[in-house]
Amino acid sequence: MSDSATPPPVPRHVFLVRIANVIESVAEQETDTVDPRAHDEDSVACGEDSKMDLEQQLVDLAGLVRTACKEELQIGCEKIVKSVSASIKKELHTFPHNDNSPVLEQANDERQQELDLLRARNESLEAEVDRLTKGLEQIKKATTQRVKEADMKATKLHKIILDTGLGVSGPTDDEVKKAFSNLYHTIFQFVMKHCQVHASQNGVYGKLSTAEAKNAFVIGAIATCVYSELFAPEVKSFGFGSDDDRQLAIVEDSLIKDGGVPNQDIVDWRVRTCRLSKKFNPEGRKVELQCEKLAFALYKKLAGVPYFRYSTSELRAKSAEIKVDLRTIFLEAFHTSMLFRRAEVEYRWLQDDSDENGRLLEKDNIQAVATTGYNNIAEAKGDFRVIFGEVIKADNTSGGVAQGAHVLRGCMVLLGPIPSL
Image (spheres, one colour):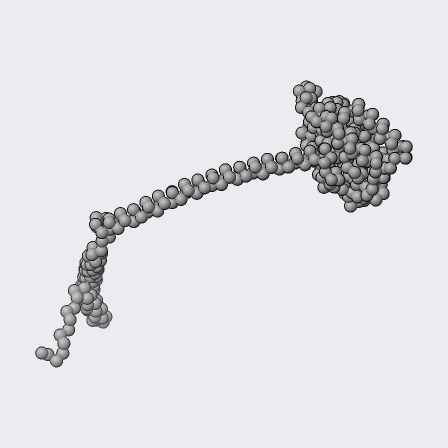
């Protein structure tokens, strides 16, 4: 063996590159050997032509060699790429990845079966959830209905107890407050339904600047009418009907004026007499007839202003409905007034400015429901109109409610400036 290792063969493209470099070197040397001192012009010219031809041939040869090298490199790269691609494909073919692989098909089938099972289970759970939800909704509705029926029965029973005077001491303060809140709400709904945003220019109502002020004014007008018919001090209802009640009121006034009958005895007589009216008139038909008459009278009064939002033809079509709604107001007001009459303590609704016992307008108990300009009761300085007066309770049965009274429900007012007629 030789001491020196045999050098590896030179690749073809490297060899061609070396040839091109040698040719360029020779061309440069030939250029340098031309004698610039030659004086034979023909020889010089011939030599220059030969030189140019040789240079061009060498340049062309070098270009051909470079082109051959590029082609050789491209061919070699393509072979390498094909070889690598073939190796990769061969390696990849060893795994069951293609669509025709039985192993892959089996795995896909198993996954699909699992997915189908999960979907079926999910559908089953959704159906179960829907069934339970519907069941819960039915239970909720049934429970709500039972609670509603129980509340209605309890309310009815409580009303019977109050109407018959079977309670230990008559209505509670909370019951009186609730009754008046309900009465106000009923009147408010009536105004919103039949009188809202009316553009009448008659009287004070027509001069009010806002819709809220107009609505509040009508609420006050209805409340004052209800007060004067059922709650004024001179009105003494017993529940027997208007004719009988007038006779009983004469008896009560006589007992009070006599002065010889203790006030507590008069109260006891009044409470027992009001209880008897439920037995004498259990269906309340006389009271309904009385409230129908009051509703008709109030309808004529409201239509004469007019406060209603309807045209003349619409009002004729709506008149029956309006009268029914007004009768509902008077029936509710009548039952509320009977709470007062069956109570052993003195309650009073201070709606009328001319109330003989005066008015308890404490600033803390005044609520402004609308205004035509003033921001509060202090700024108004008395320029306001009572919409729904306060409800008070006396601390004794003397009949005097101006002193020692407890305000159960505050006064609702319309702040001015109130326009003059």
